[in-house]
Image (cartoon, rainbow, N blue to C red):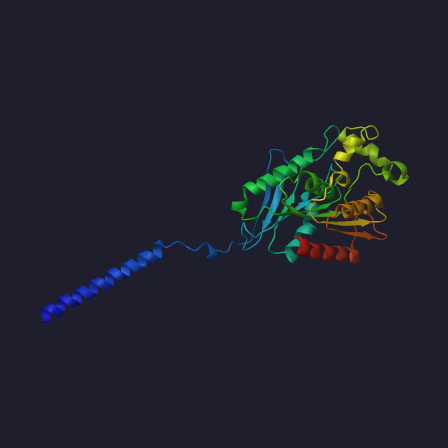
Length: 295
C-alpha cells in the first residue's frame, strides 16, 4: 500500500514539474502583442533625401504613432525661391506640436534658385523626392501617406503648385497658403507700379522672358493649374503686402469657389507680408479649426 502511494505521489510531482516547465516555456516563446508596444516621441534632424547640401528635412514623430493613423504635415519655408531655411518654420512646428500632438511634422529644406539656376522644376522635384522618401519609410517612421501642406510666401506657392498639379495619387488632404503667390500673370504685376519690379526680378531667376512667355508663367501658377479635385485650401493675405498684390488671394479664392473646391480665405486689413499680435492669433485659430475639420 505504501509502495503504491509512493509511486502515485512521485507521478504527481513529476506531472507538476512538467506542467510548470511547459507553462514557463509558453510564456517565454509567446510573442509580444504589437498592440502593447507604444512608440515613443522621437525626431530625426537633417535627414538627407538627395546629394545636395540643401536636400534635407527634419521629421518629428509623435508618441503612439502607427502607419494606419498618423498623418503628416509638410512645412515649406519662404524666401523668394532663392533664400530661407527650414529653421524659419520653427514657429509652425511649435504650434502644430501643441495643437496636434498625434501628427507627424516634416520641415523641409530644398535647393535654392539663383541666376542661371531656375527654381522650376528643381524645387518641385525636391518635394516629389521628399514625398517619395517618406512613403518608402512609412513602415520605419510609422506614418500614413496622408499629407497636409503648409507654406509661407514662396513656400506657400510651392505647396499649392505641388498639391494642385503634381499630387498624382491624391495624397494631399489639405493646403495652407500664408501670403503665397498664386498667379504670375496677374495684371497687377504689369499695371501697378508698386509691383512692377517683380517681372524683371522673377525672370532673372527663371531665365524665361516674362512678357513673351505667358504660357510658361501659367504652368507654374497655382491659379492656372488648380482643378476641381484640389485638396481643401485655406488662404491668408494682407491687404498692404508690398510683395503680393491683394488680387493674388482674392482671385485664388474666386477660382476655388468656381471649381467647387472647399476653401477659406482671410484678408487682413492693414497687414503686409506677415503679421503678429491679434491677427496672428486669429490665423492660428482659423488654421487649427481648418485642420481639425479637413485633415
